[in-house]
Length: 199
Ligand code: IMP
Ligand code: MG
Image (cartoon, rainbow, N blue to C red):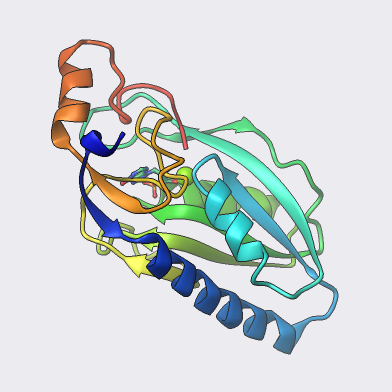
């Protein structure tokens, strides 16, 4: 697995430190305004590891909801429309929702899930992402809590994948270009923008 990585972008210690800070910031925000508790809605699969760590930094009354979203076929240079693979498993009507995702890239995923939460009657919605690729998301899709702004490179680890692999890397790392070039060249259609891909 290490041979597929060019370099580590964010080491595990730095992730852990930032997750603790985010926890303090989020707890402080919600403590001020509500004591009815929150619902943490996680977008699977990419946010799986992040949310597990983040939740344990939040000394708040909470329920947990899951939604599984996938990106679909489209031109290789642009992600397809995100599609819900498994719908939200909890009722958010009247609830304060913290929506958690791994990365804010073009913003399509957060926009779509946010709309669903609004339609489901959430009382408030705030969003938290571990990573953001700056300048890519349109102004209508912003996150309230952001771990790190990163360069526009394809990253894996700490839950983020390429072709559903590398999620178990403890650090966030940049994947060698040959890895995805090879898959594309092989005609397998495994480019993340060219085939259904677990988030
Ligand atoms: P968006 O809908 O374009 O904002 O993309 C968000 C989703 O695309 C994230 O939830 C990730 O699953 C995936 N994604 C975007 N950039 C990367 C990356 O660099 N590595 C791995 N997954 C990514
Ligand atoms: Mg994701």
